[in-house]
Image (cartoon, rainbow, N blue to C red; front, side, top):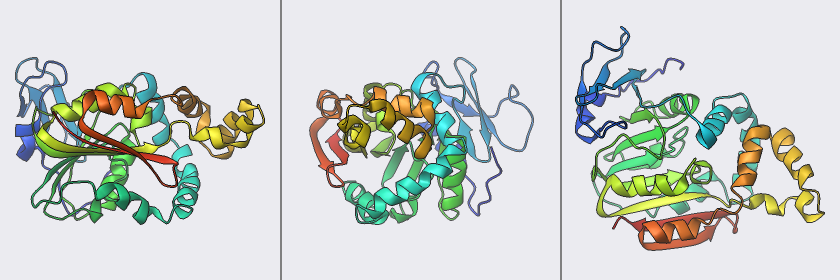
Length: 287
């Protein structure tokens, strides 16, 4: 991971009360002699001894990934992601602009002072600076590059960032007031397990806001319409720069039933289409 230049230092020592071991659910403590020597602090589980190093302020929970999470991380850590940004920009432009599109999601978060928010798949944190300054924000993502960019995009924000998976969050039960997740849910290795983890780490009755593009958005592409889905695969992988592995991941998830998952896991679940019916928004409460 590249060095992050920031005026604010992420101090995970101040957040030990929310951390728990992903291996045994044990308590995390500061200081360990098992970690390689270096300028960044390390932490360890008091029960199983698992070590959690930090790099440039980012808590390393898990970086050896498998399945769809590995495919997604490889894409976001590769040169393909910057090349795809043009298409992301084009999408926002045709839907009223990025600020307007993201605000349609963010406005569903509780508007309370001192909110403790967990952002799952925080990415490059482009919208983090739009959130109230008195909110305490913890973000987790599978991409080292995205987390580096998140810190660079928010140099004055006191963020706590972690490298890890949504399906096994390194946080204690009932640690947050709300959870936000934008743009990762369709591609998690296990979306339902990830949503159940979001429920676990918030207080009962807390709000959970999740959004992404439609899983079957490629149905609107020309190849599908003329009976040549292979053409769409080439367009997505090569022309749009997603690469074949990530393009195939998108195709595998085209039948993902987001609403059904939400109604199984959340209380008062509301599912609706947004962005000219090319995206979805799900809002509910933890039971």
